Length: 217
Image (cartoon, rainbow, N blue to C red; front, side, top):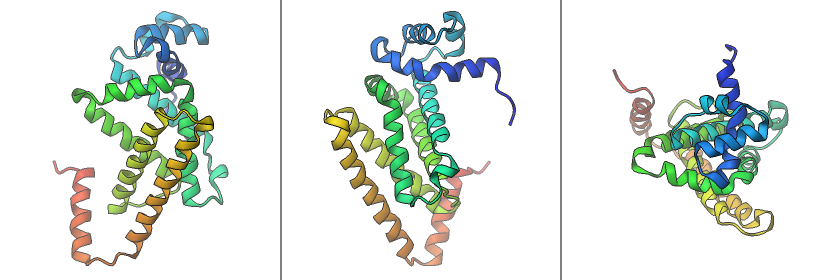
């Protein structure tokens, strides 16, 4: 792996703090300046490291959340855990990481929901779901690769929306909501494992999804 440039190192250092300060200042340069002050970094350097656009700032923040997740869930920590527990723990940890920036996350989702930002929002959702499944040990390359990420993306997205409005102590309602959604995913995976469709149907589906992943030139 190539070493990170000084600019990228600074960008990664600032990203989470920008989200926390966006609670008060929105996804703006004011939040970048506040994050720089919080971390003892020169404001001009922090501004140089961060993108100008709001959607791009949100993207970098979520990338930082992804990195925090990857750092927390080492192979040693995940060893011996059931798949359900792995996925549940990772989704919940994401919420904990974003806790200090919850209102900024709400604004960020509104930004990504704008028509011009929808493609970016979809890529972000897929990227986060893909990371969680890879950390959980998933190595599928057939249509299961896609269905797993689509279902987890839906679970995470719906849980995130429930969490944003959860006023219960310790986010108890969100925890219960997540448990129900994870159960749904496990039931779906069990159904897929039991399904004995024809080889032609499976081949056609795999070929179609393969084109989505590797579009013809």
